[in-house]
Length: 253
Image 1 (cartoon, helix red, strand yellow):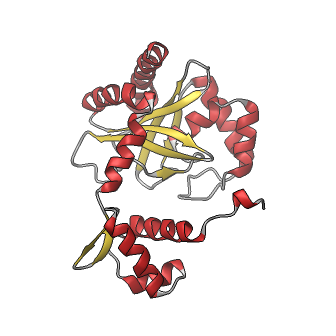
Image 2: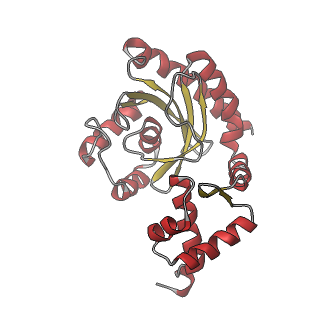
Image 3: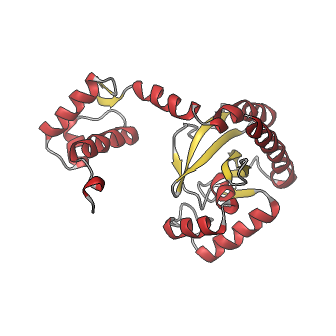
């Protein structure tokens, strides 16, 4: 490994702590130290620095991430053209369908949600922006994968871990390639309880001015609500129309 590629251990450890707090919530020093493999004193010093900078706060139940991260996240996503253009379109789609609307982009071999909007309080699953998700078992992921160049898609398929999330998850590369071919032909991707039990999703790509997928949009909801023509025809048509408007605006942005 070249010298320029050697991780800085102190930064690496701070990021370990941040990522642990992100997934576990308020936690004490000892538990954090055990999780990240460091001494209590080392973790305490990292936490004090993060606390002074506003990235971590201390509560009665332990340390947790501070609101400073909201500013960073907002700064990152608002510099992305597709976010600015797609957000109002997704809001309209959510109002029209009363489902969860999603905007996702690819980051390396995973997807990340830039924006999520919930249409109904009855839908309880997480709608947090910034969450990573797998490409092989989500509608947005498959929509992006299907419309990448063959060279890029082949490289991504070598990196993706086709892990099983439900009994419906595609875990065979050959089967995934076949489905991606159908997605390209139909212009729409489906997640039929592949990422989570009881959850269905329909997604379409957003193709940028360079004819490559800038991202994808989707709507998600309970499998019991996404059935019949509503699932297979109406929602795909609404999503395609929404994606077309986003693509037109991207060309003029």
